[in-house]
Length: 59
Image (cartoon, rainbow, N blue to C red; front, side, top):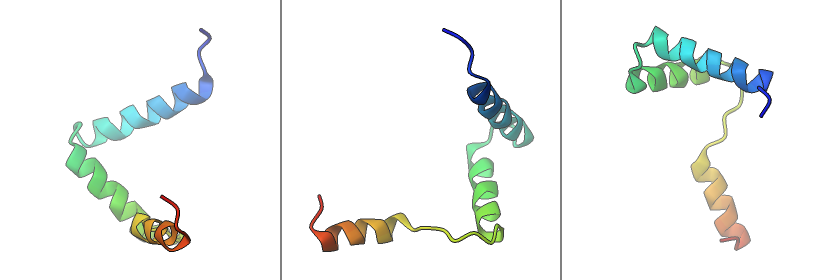
């Protein structure tokens, strides 16, 4: 199978982030949450999406 340059780039970024936090998943997640809060982008809560499905009768 041919190497996909997009997959290679995503994996390189993942490895760089993991190395920055010494492969500590808790530190990686905390950093991600911090970047979410300071990004200025609107975030969607999974809880709200679940509630919407419930209101629509979707299982």
